Image 1 (cartoon, rainbow, N blue to C red):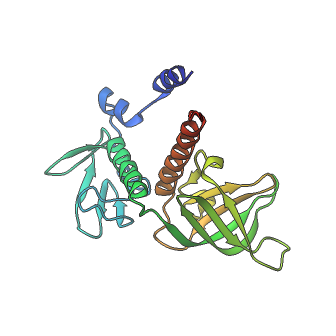
Image 2 (cartoon, one colour; image 1 turned 90 degrees about the horizontal axis):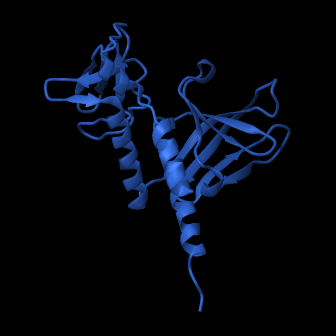
Image 3 (tube, helix red, strand yellow; image 1 turned 30 degrees about the vertical axis):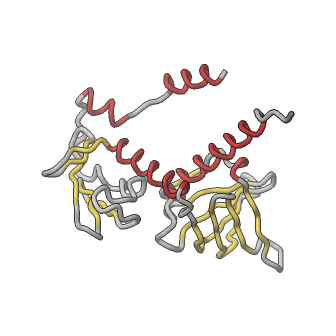
Length: 222
C-alpha cells in the first residue's frame, strides 16, 4: 500500500514553474515577482529569515542586499546563478527539518485571532499567543463570550499540515487551526511568523510522529 501511495503521489506531483520554463511560456507582467517573499522567506545567499522583499521583477534581501530578477520564464537570476523557484522552496524546507532535528525550532509569537464558528460570521477575538514546537501547537486566548483565557492544544498527529493564506481577506498571511466546533484564523503581529515555515514544520512533525508510532507497533516483546 505504501508503494502504491508513493507512485500515486509521483503522478500527481506538478511543478508549474518547471513546466513554464520547459515550455518557454513567457510571462511579461512587470510585477511578476511581487509576493514571492512570502514563500521564499529565507535568503538563499546569507540564509537570513524574514528579510526578503519584492518589487516589480526583483526579489532581494534587506540584510545582505543580494537580489535576483525573475525572468519571463520563471527563473530567479543574477550575475552568479539561475535558481529554479521550487528548488529554493524545497531548500527552505530542508532547513526547517534540520532546525527541528537540532532541537532549535520554536515559535512563540503574538497573533490576532478571528474565529469562524459557522459559515456566516467571523468573530474578532483580539490578541493571543501562538506557540509551536516539537510537541505541537498551543493557542492561548480569550474566546468569544468567555471571561478567562484558555489554551488549546493541537498535537502533531492531529495536524497533517496547516492551512496557509498569504493575503486572506486583504489582512495578510495567516494560518488556521480547527476544533470540532470552530476554526481560528491566526494573523501575525510579529515578523517571525511566516505561514510557509510553519507549514514546513507542521508537516515534518506529523511525519516523525507517525514514524514513531510505526516503529513502536513493530516492536515485539518476548
